[in-house]
Image (cartoon, rainbow, N blue to C red):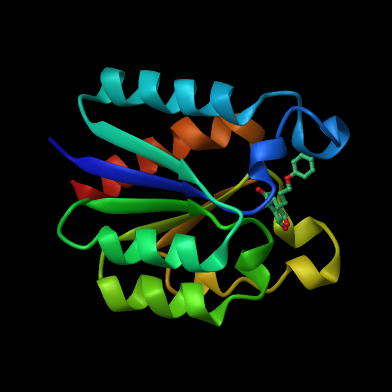
Length: 144
Ligand code: CA2
């Protein structure tokens, strides 16, 4: 059975509670349930984790080596700043998919740069919460 680690970065714990016009009304707990349902439907296992701390996300990426077949990561604002997360992803050699609720390329210019995107095999963005099950499907397709 394929094992997928789904990582959510800073402020994503606030989903559904603030800025619904940008990020929607779905909570992170709702998204985690959507991922669990999708995993059952696809016959795989998923584990969802969220942290507001860059180092914690990096530790989890390191842990993924040998423990998970793929990583789906919405690194939040660290997407645009963190060379450390980029280096962690490339060091573990676990296939990694970039994920965002919004389309970062149609937002402010400072969101157009993605360090995660340099080491991910693909990106899914602009589909809101529905992007999470879509990302699981894309990862399963990639893993073959
Ligand atoms: O679109 C995405 O998924 C982002 O990764 C979300 C990040 C943002 O910095 C990235 O540029 C794109 C921000 C997540 C903040 O989440 C909030 C949720 C509710 C209220 C306020 C922020």
